[in-house]
Amino acid sequence: MSNKIRILMSSDVHGYIYPYSYANNKPERQGFGLLGHTIKRLRNENTIVIDNGDVLEGSPFAYYHFEKEADRENPITQIMNEIHYDFFNLGNHDFNHGQDVLMEHISKLDSKCLSANLIYKGKPLSEPYHLINIAGKSIALFGVVTHFIPNWEKPENITDFEFVDALDCAKDICRQIKEEGKADYVIGVYHGGFEKEPDTGAELGGGTGENQGYEMCRQIDNLDILLTGHQHRPMKGVLFNTAYIQNYHQGTELSFVEIDTETNEITTEIMKVDEQPDEKILEIAQDEENRCQEWLDTPLGVSSVDLVINDENDARLHKSQVVTFLNNVNFAVSHADISGSAIFLFAKGFESKITMRDLVATYVFPNTLVVKKITGKILREYLEKTAEFWDVKDNQIIIEPSRDFPTPQHHNYDMLDGVEYEIKVSNPVGHRITYLTRHGVPVKDDDEFTLCINNYRAAGGGDYDMLKNAPTIMEIQRSAVELIAEYIMEEGDIDFDPVNNINVVI
Image (cartoon, rainbow, N blue to C red; front, top):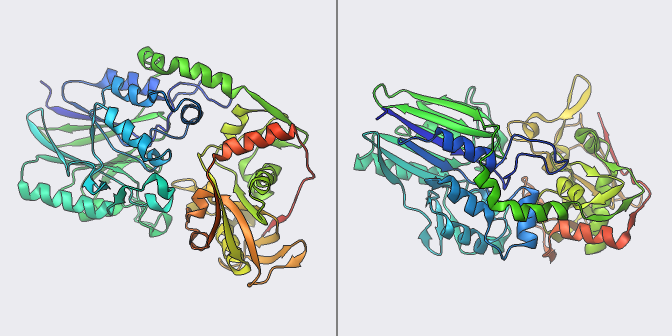
């Protein structure tokens, strides 16, 4: 028997199964098919296999399943059982389709839950920790999830859940493990990332509490290994005597950790997944995947306007007409005065012949729409917040570094229609909106408007607290993708005069 204990962790697979891109069907080294092959190849008698959450949402396949075939058993659950995970943690996006979907997924998984800081109907969802005897050693394994979920999620999706502070919970569990003295090694699994740069201690992300990995390593002295996720950032190292690791998303990488029980040396490696898929995994979802592919190629309509995104940053800096189109949909559905939309990461836009493939490759989140009542003062605060996305370097407008690294925050830059405004990036934060008008008339602080935004932004996602606290006028409880698709089919030909109402200057 080997004297090495092996830990394999996947994280943030986001519903990807097949090794190709849904945007163009070209090969892509990603997904559970390749991931499962890699895990099965590396697994030995001294291996613990863990998934660290965010498996149920994020891919066009996942969207298709929950929109069109939700009455069928979720293939993702079946695939995780085929891979034979020993343990799983939950991620924030696993709540996106509601707690009934989530609890069914949990109940059908053969692996054990690690999410110790989640309280469901008054009871902890998991044991505080699991004790494992392997290679002649005792391992205490626990998991926690970012407790920031209520800041993003629709309230009806988390009705019966309570979220305990992840850092506090991890500290309490490790204190308990230390007092009981049963463990040779302590391993934490955290669906969250680092709030400070591990190498330098530099602040990342504003200290909101969303990510607490740095403080877990700093404050917990008996934490040997911290497996992290959520930020989609490949990283590994040792911080305050704790070995840490995190891999990239969509099943492109696997976190590999080994403990030498003779020397107590811990090694970490981020591995690219195998190029060969596990055919049994692919077969599980193949019939539904075939139907998904047919659905993706469904023609919706045509566009007489250039809605293709060739350069994401230029599309934000100069407001692609994709944004005008998305806001037009919001106006049609909500009849609001003002609408705000973002261009999501890797968005492709729409070809002249628009298909569902174009749509789900551009609007990648399962959002709904919300109408808020706001004043001119709140509107200006909203715009000042979104203006923080930009910075100036070498007399050029760039993305403000913390919005681009370690986790891209491109979805937190909104562009509004229904008003005209200028962002002067060289001005101090909070003083960048140099003019703000509606139909050419300056907006006053006590003016009142209705504003249509997605549910994530309405809940304050992206630190937009001014919107979270604004009164809600209406909730449109239908998928934004569904609403956009219906709009395209009803219009047939998307044709409008370009609206260039936003000016971003140095």
